[in-house]
Image 1 (cartoon, rainbow, N blue to C red):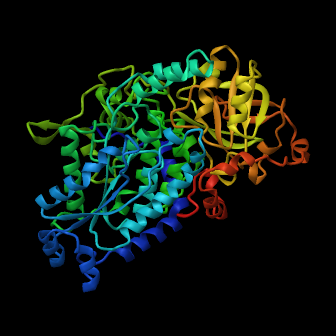
Image 2: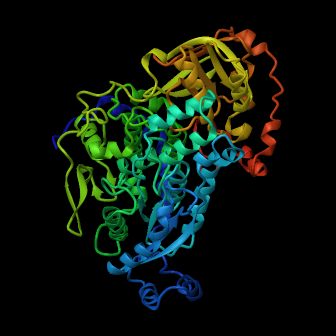
Image 3: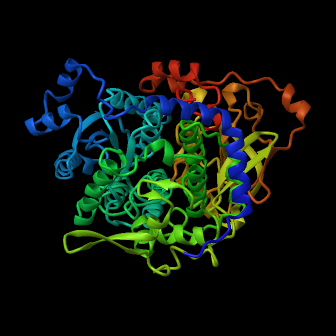
Length: 609
C-alpha cells in the first residue's frame, strides 16, 4: 500500500491525547512492567498452588504445566444460551483446549462473566443494571485472571457491555498476550427495515402483539449476533480495527468451517505472542496504546457506530491509562468520512457489509486517506498490513488473500474518495443545557435541526402514555430526565424510538433530549443523549419546564433552552418522583455505583479510573 501522510487533525488529536495521558499512561506501564515475570507466569507458584491449578486436568496437560515449558492459555468466556450472540461459545472451550494441545500448549477456562441482553431488558427493570454490568464484567474478568498461572488469554465475548468489560478487566493483566475471539452474526432474517415498520405499526395499534412477535422472531432467529449495526457489532468493529481480532474475523457466521478455523488461529496467535515459543513477546498493553484508541474512534465515526461507545470507549481507554473525551470524538468527526451504511444508518445488515468487502476494505480506504495510524502493534504483529488480507479456506486450510480492490456494493460501503458524507456519524452538542452527543448518520438532513416546545417527563413510560393518549400530535422536544447514572443506572430508552418515529413520519418536528442513553440501534429521530450534568446532579435539564423552547441543532452542534441564565438558575429544582425506579432488580447494587459515580457522565469507569 502507498504510504499516505497522516491527516494533520488525526496527528493533532493523537498528540493531544498522548500529552494529556502522559502521567496515567506512565503509571499503567509501570504497573505492567511490575507484573511481567521471567519464565512462565506460574514459575514462582508453590507446589500446593500448582496442584490446585492442574487437579482437574488430563495427565498430559498436567505434565506440560508442571514442566513449566509450555505456554498456558486462560479462557474468559461470556457463554450463556440466553443470548443468541453468546450461545455459540458453548463449544469453544473444548475446541480451544484441543487445538492448544496440537500446538504444544495448554488451555483452561479461567472464569465466566455475566452477560445480559439489552434486547431482552429493553424498557424493563433489568435495564437499570445494564451499564452497571460493564464494571461487574470487568471485575469478573480480573478475578478470572488473578490466579497468575497464565501466559496468554482468550476473551470470548460479543455484545453491548460484555466486550468493553472484558477489555477493561483484561487490561489489568495487560502483560498477558491476549486475543479477543468473536462468534459472528446470525444469518440474515427479516430485514431490519421491515422489522422497524412493524414496530411502528404496533405503536399505532395497527397490528397486534401476535404480528409483532412473528416479525421479531423472523428477525432474531438463530445463534449469532443481531444483524443490525448496534453496540454489539460496533464492539466487533472496534476489536478488529484496534488489532485485537484476527483480520476479517468479526463478521463470519457461527457454525461455519471458516469460523472454526479462525478460532483455532486465534489460539495460535495467543500462544505465539506469549513469548514462550521463540516468537516475539507481544502483550496486550503493547497493542492498546494512544494510537490504537484513536484508530478505534476513527472506525466508530467511519461506520456510524453506536453512541454507547462515547461512554464505553472513554472507560476502555482509561483502563490503559489513556485519557480521551468527547472533544476528541468531535474533532475527528469533522475529518473522518462516513463510509458505511448499515442499519439503522441504511437498509443493509452486517452480513451485507461483510459481503461488500467489510472491515478489510474499510480499513484500506481509511489508511489510504491517512486516517488510520499504521505504526501500531496488533495480535498479528507490527503494523496494519495483515489487516489488508481476508481469510478463506483453501480446502481445509486457513489461508489469506488481499481484500477486494473495491466495494462489491456501493450502497453499503463506499471509497474514501466518494463517501456517504464528508464527516463522521457522531457530533458533540453544547449549550446552556450542558454537553451531549448525537448520532447523525441515521438522521436525514431535514430532521437535524428542531426548535420546539419541551414536553418534560421523568420516565419513558410517561412519554409512552402521552403518545397513546394522543397528546403528542404536535411539534415538541421530549425531555426525559432523571435517567443518568446517578439516578437509575442510565438505562437505554430505545422503546421511545417507534412512537417518536411515527410522529416524525406524520410531519411533526420531534426530538429527544435526555441524560439517559439510547440503543446503538437508534438513530432515525434526532436525540441529544448522555446529557451532562445529569438532572440528579443538579444539571440545567432539571430546571426545564413544559413549554420552554428548545433548540437542537446538529448542524451547528447546539443544544439550548430559550431561558436566560439567571432565570434558569433561579428556578427551584423539582422534587423528582423516582418511585417507578424502586421496582428495579438489584437496586441495592447502586449504592456501590452511586458512591463512585463521579466522572461516569462522560463514560469514565468508577471502578477502573
